[in-house]
Image (tube, rainbow, N blue to C red; front, side, top):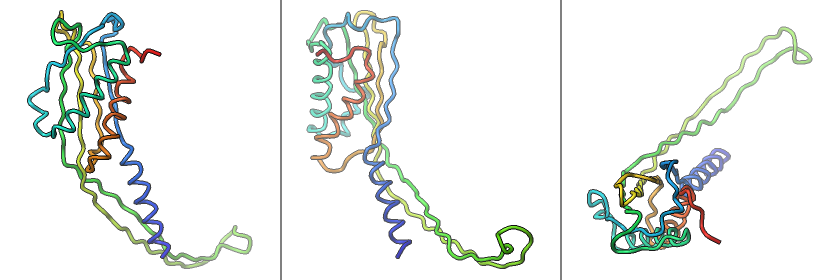
Length: 190
């Protein structure tokens, strides 16, 4: 019974940490004054990567990006923008493996006060349980280019477990894009 509860606790910890997992990376040209950029345009999805998304998720992503950029004083325009933004998404099937080892038994003799010489024998047994969990991991990349020079000026990458339920994605997509945009050199305006 104790083993069952220990395994249950381990599974809950793994589930909680997996659900909240989001790895964020970014890089940018440190010689650029990002506050000079006032307008942007979406230049599309790289390599038609949006085809793996449904229309609702595409809208969730673009709405979250627009909200984050607007909070930083950037306005979306159809042409003559300061920044051109491309988006890319890929989803991979992953498997996580966990192992839990339970040790049982053991007894011996080590002298009257636990020191000195002594004789003893003991038995120890161990049982290891393995479990595998299949899940989808998505990587979302935002590339921002100076529209005039066509040079990459900022890149943000977020890797996260893909939520299966739409209502979860409705909340998690904007939240994760918000975390990603915290890496952008211009902070939201007050």
